Length: 334
Ligand code: ADP
Ligand code: F6P
Image (cartoon, rainbow, N blue to C red; front, side, top):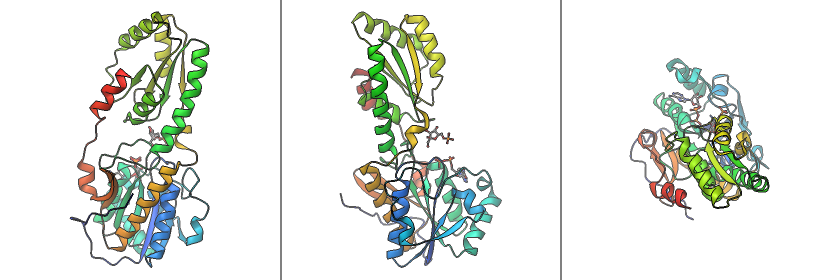
């Protein structure tokens, strides 16, 4: 699939960038290392110097900055997590924090930064860009909840990890003729729940964007399925709804069907990235290095309509994303 770059329409700086930094921020995701590797190697091949910033914006404020060479990113493409570490940083949310970070960049000769993270991290990159440091964002989150892009680094690995775990819970649920509530990640977004719910053939899928908190509907569904001879009842519940353990108790009391809750948790955020996450993250990392080389700032790389493109961060953050209605309706029927 060819990588396609859209000409920057807004926010294009003319500043000549010589040294760039790369950092990972917010929740980690499998494929971040592939993105770091691509940023480093493409930037070096473009004639730039590259520095790794440890632990996100926190590490930037604490000047945890290291030189990166081609060999610094050897043997990392298949590793989960992020070799740079990641953090959430309250100080960077303040005006003083951003100004301090920009001064630290200038002190270290860093005139451009690739920020790999979710849309919170993009807001930080936007502010840093306003302080004169060129910034490019890459979508790194397992949640798929960034509006400007149909793909986020780590989602593919996370859904495959969760799908395999759910298959296993399903086996034992069936043997014991139980109902299982399986909670998957996604504090505000139901994409992991939707994809796994369909891929695992769940009887009910609860999404934060759609759930009406009417447990009676689920109870009626379980009773009806039991009458039809169904041996198990799998409910995929998104973290944003949560309360799986108490929900299990209430459902067991109302239906008489033994009901257990399994919370998959952080296992979904770790592990070796899939081929897709390694490949797409490599393209996106490479594009980020090119954008900084061209003097662009305040932009994010996205995958939209089957193409890799870039958007102005302001434009990207103003976009909204909703669970596709057709896919949601289909999930209820299948
Ligand atoms: P994600 O990037 O995965 O959405 P967060 O929302 O936790 O994760 O954001 C990661 C970090 O980005 C925060 O800890 C903070 O340092 C920075 N950040 C988030 N929102 C802002 C903001 N509005 N202004 C400045 N920095 C922000
Ligand atoms: O990375 C996204 C995510 O995994 C969400 O699904 C989840 O709600 C959140 O991160 C939890 O992050 P943490 O527990 O590290 O704050």
